[in-house]
Length: 283
Image 1 (tube, rainbow, N blue to C red):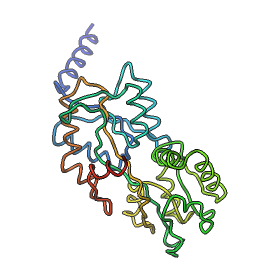
Image 2 (cartoon, one colour):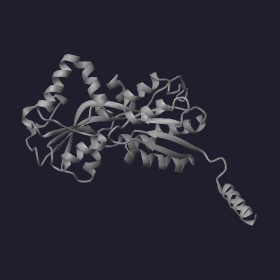
Image 3 (cartoon, rainbow, N blue to C red):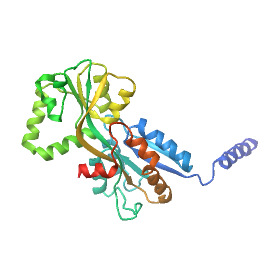
């Protein structure tokens, strides 16, 4: 009996020690942790609202989380989803997973908060001839770089979005020809964009198709690579999944659209664009 009261007393003390009315948000995030985690920490520091984050793996980034959100539709876990890939955002909207709201003063459902650009990375130790530098995605089929180019799996993430837009522009026939030419040129496919950058940075390949954030991370570490923009932009977006914490979600959206987060997400030379400009580019 003494042990029973002792255990009860310990549980009682533990319960009393828990912060009352602690505010938190569960954020599913397909944006790289190296960029998103510092923003979550800053948001908590400013507001006191804790962020509990669920990330996706590099290999199935955005697709895996989108599938999970659809599976959880009837009993959602996430309060908000920070999407790194527009196709998955569209899937969630069409599936009725994302909720409509008036957080920006009018009825809306997708909130663009930032963007990425598709870029080439070139190892200047491996490929010093500027004439051989890629200028468009079609240069991946150039025989001058046969067997020297790498890209991420086009079934997932930003490469899926990039190749879907290409298919829409080219049509099925020309897109099929393009894919066949990639194979003929021995373009190596890796699981994700970060692997592509590492392969090029390590000198295993001369050219890689990737995202600017993955490239910037390795450039900051001193990798012998440069970035060349492809002209393709796409937005990071926020989708509201649950509406029972709208006060906290409103603060999170305001923070993400505020000066601190925007400076962190945009002022990464040479990609200093405003969200409105990027949205116009991709429409």
